[in-house]
Length: 154
Image (cartoon, rainbow, N blue to C red; front, side):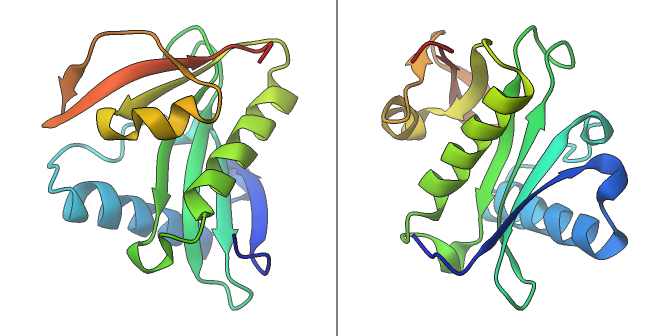
């Protein structure tokens, strides 16, 4: 894992135009362009979420996730839109991103299970972080997913 990155949580109101552009660009590059998924990336939920970015010292955004509060899209807090730019993969950044997302969820929503709709091929990765499968596989935007829960006591 790179230790020179700046990790920062943002509430919607704290996002300046450049930061918002960087996180939206990263999400579109990964989920729409790279994964070839034509879906509405701007889903109307971002204003209610907390946003985690990992940036290089020069300001380039390398990783991102959003934390959905309980009640926004399900009863549990949820991690979503976890993304790492292609050139930064293979360095442990996805694991660090998920771990920081879990920490952020636990601090903001103590004693609550954490939900994620995981792409099915990432099931072993999320299991290594304490998530357990909570559904049968389902197709979402042309990609197989599975619901996973991280029990708060684990």
